[in-house]
Every structure is written in structure tokens, then in C-alpha cells.
Image (tube, rainbow, N blue to C red; front, top):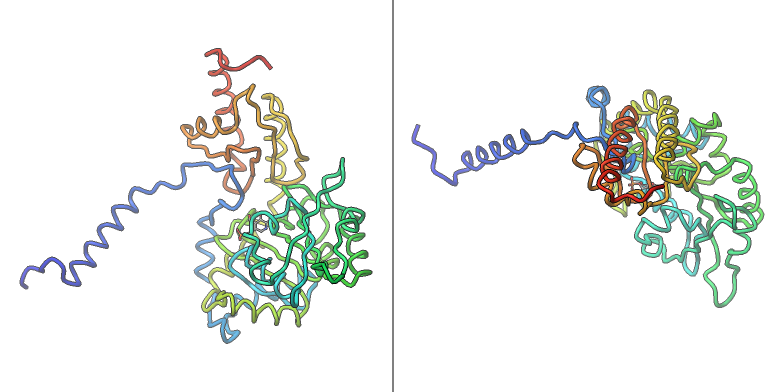
Length: 376
Ligand SMILES: Cc1ncc(COP(=O)(O)O)c(C=O)c1O
């Protein structure tokens, strides 16, 4: 065989192969413990092994058995007629908002701290031409209630973009929205003929903590979005649930968004695996979060939210060491924190709270000894 000339197809593939192998060998992704979010949770080896075993088909023909099984299972869990598997929580929320709304002028009323208001690029303005009305909880409360909503409601007039949908989030910043409050908001929304959507990205956590079934929460909403790639640890995926008619509409919008699947069964399989194996363990995340909260308080940080589920929020402390500085320091211990107030527990870090708090304690001690930290 003549020697291969540089630039031939085989040669290029050979080079690519070598580059990829070399770079892969430099990866060492498992030695970092990450407390920034539960979205960073990775599929476990067992989940990856299970993903391989699920059958697939073309979901464009409705023939992916695992996607169908996931959608039926989640619809049943939520007590809804139908469900639709989508790539992300944002896609699920945005499809829900788009499918509920008709034509402008109109607006969506939501909690001012919610993901759909702050972190979805104002998508509902793009997709549905809708305004958003952000509502803050009245003083002393950690959630919005009917009087807050009533006050912010935009009524129909020749000048207005009237409220046509109310969207809630549970959990929000890790805090559980009480079911009685949901029920009151549901009754109010019904009295005004307004549909109610729930961003239930972490409804799993609320349900596991309170013991209230997903179905019981979901019955107060016209649509519920549930995420699998947060605390449940799937690599990707959310499911939107609602009436059959609503989900049919949403399927068409998903097509328009370019989000229809083909052989997505392995991904849906990861979600089924997560439901069976990770959902029941969320209480471990909550227990670890409570321990982390206590330890941070003992170090001198002040908790600024209830630790109901898997999130711990503390006030930044220049006196102690700012969280931004702390983030830089803990990096050398192989730990990532957000550098802002939030710490999040998930299956990838729940067993490493000691590692985090020992590192933080050591950093604080070092600073104290160096005379940088003020007495607290
Ligand atoms: C409450 C909430 N809703 C929706 C989303 C969006 O999910 P995704 O990142 O999968 O689009 C997130 C993401 O963290 C979230 O926290």
C-alpha cells in the first residue's frame, strides 16, 4: 500500500480520531463537586446502562414506545389526560404559555421571582406577543396570594393588555408553595375564567417533602411542567401535562419550535429511570440541605430563606468572606459554588456536604489567622 498522503479522507479521519482520543483522556469530570445548581447533576452509570435498554421508534409517527410510556406515566402521575416530552424546562413552560394564549393584547401574571419572568429571555413576548405582570409577595410572606394577584390583575379596557393566564412556580427558590394557597389561587382563577399554569420543575421536591402526591398538586392547574434534569438527574428532558386538547395544540407548537423528536426513547428512558430510582431519594437531598444550612449558620452566615427542600440561601457576608471570594477559594478544593447566595443539593453532591463545609471552615480560619476577617 502506498503511504497515505496528508489530506486524504482516511488521513483526516485518523487525525480527528487522535485529537478526540487525546482530549478525552484529559477529561476528569468526576472529581469536582458542584453546589451551584441541581441542573449540573449528571446521569449515574446505572442510569446510562438503563438508557441503552429502552426500545425506540420514530416519535414523529407516535411510534417511540419509551416516549409514549413516559408520557402516559407522567400524565397518570399528574392526573391529566395527556402529556408531552420536551427537551427542556424552558421549552415546556414556553409551549404551555403559547398554547394557553390566543392573540394580543394580553398578559401573563406571575411571581416576580419566577423562572418564566427572569430567566426565559422574555420568551412569551416573542412567542405570544404577551406582556408579563410580575407580582411580589406582600410583606412578610414568601409566596404570592390571592390579594396580591387581585391587586395586580390587568382588567380589559381599550388601553390594557388584560391578564389571560396566571403562572405559578413550585418549589420557588426551594421553598414550597402551600397547597391551601394554591387551592385559593385556583378558585380565584376559575372565578375569572383564567387558566393556571404551574412551572413544576421541582414539584417532585415539594411532593417528596410534603407527601402530597403530584396529582393532588396538579389538579389545581390546567397545565403542569415537570423537569427531569434537575434533582432527578436525567441528562435532559421535561414533560408538559394537561388536557388532551391542550397537549395536541402544544404538540403543534412544539413542531413549530423545531422541538419534535425522532428516536428519543433512550432519553425518555433516563426520565423513567429517574422516576423509579431518584424521585424516591429526594428526601436525602432535603436532609443534606438542612445540614448544610445549619453548618453555614454555625459559620456565621445568615439564612435568608427557609430550607424546605434542596436549596440553601444565605446572606452574602463581607465580614466573613464574600461568597464570590469563597467561590474562588473553594475551587482549589475541587468544589464549585455559585458565588452568590444559593447552594443547591442534588444526587451528585448530597454525600459531600462535609467536604464543602470543611473547606469553607478552613478558608475562614486561614483568613482569620491572616487577620483579614473581622470578628463575628
Ligand atoms: C423553576 C425552573 N423552571 C424552568 C427551568 C428551565 O429548565 P431548563 O434549563 O431545562 O430549560 C429551570 C432551570 O433551572 C427552573 O429552575
